[in-house]
Length: 252
Ligand code: ADP
Ligand code: MG
Image: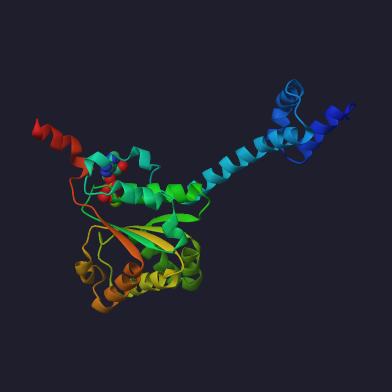
């Protein structure tokens, strides 16, 4: 369509520039501007904000998607009263993402079902929403991926890939034993991220018993050393939330 008026030309321009939201909200903003006698600058700010808001939302959605969280459980979904061993203030402090600025780690340590993955994911979602590149992976999958990369002669680039994330969440360390060869791969990653990037780890195994996970005490020590040097350890003692309903029934 050939524009016959400047108004039509403006809509065409917005569409050509792919400013879809500005095009969609044009009438509304123009009406508002006339009714409230807005200045040209204020009108343009209002119009451009529509475009920016939607792009920000899309950006956040894609950051959260890329992070590959197992679910989208946030801190508001966490019942702190069920788990009194957790210092709520400390978790809220993690959500400020201060630890990421300082390249510090967090380790959630505790038995199955106490909320380790939930809390790690909540912090990860907050980071992703703030445009911090974040990735969630189970320890076993991480090691399988590194092994595969080594077989295909692309270990270095895979390690670099996992080092790139400002926040990496490694879930479930110690659920499956890791042989010495695999432990070396894990060590390499931890070493590359050491003091440069933040990592959140979850485990159900006390640090003293990490020798048994990694089977090689020296490597286990080297891994722990780097993880714990700048880390906050959150030890959770309590009942499994998964068994909550069963426990409630027993107490009735
Ligand atoms: P863990 O990783 O420690 O084994 P999860 O974080 O996977 O435990 O928690 C198990 C399930 O219980 C998840 O669905 C999680 O969202 C839920 N859950 C655990 N603790 C709480 C809690 N305090 N409040 C609400 N839901 C919880
Ligand atoms: Mg878990």
